[in-house]
Structure formats: structure tokens, C-alpha cells
Length: 87
Image (cartoon, rainbow, N blue to C red; front, side, top):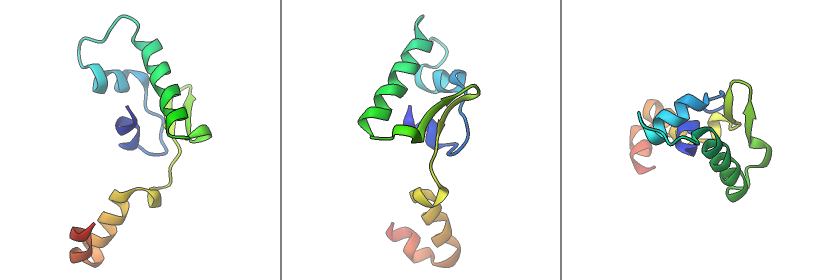
């Protein structure tokens, strides 16, 4: 589930999108509770505290783009492609 949140860092991800990514077309009956439980456990396991929050619009991972490897990779692609390949 954290991977789904990393696709849209800093933006709320609706529960139905998390459900579709995790379970596809046939989610279990208690899916909403499962999502809440998994998000809570990830928050604790990854020591995310207030960086992984639930909003009315969905779950939100507060992370700056500069904290993501993909941002460094994309920057290197434009300025130093060899450095991008070394990442």
C-alpha cells in the first residue's frame, strides 16, 4: 500500500484507488477496515507518525519530492545521464 501513496506524494489517495491497487476487482468484504488497519500499521512500522495521515479525500503521505529517489534520478537524467544510471 505505501507504493500506491508514493505514486502521488503529497496528495490524498482515495481509499477506492488503494483498494483497486491492492485487491483488484474482488476486494474482501471488510476492505475499508483493512485499509485503515494497514495504513495504521505502516505508520507505526515505518515511524511515519504525522507524515502518513488520513484526510476526507483519502490517505496522504507527506513527503517532499526531494526525498524521493525518482526525483534525483529525473534531475540526473537531464543534467548528467551517467549519474542517473549509477543511482
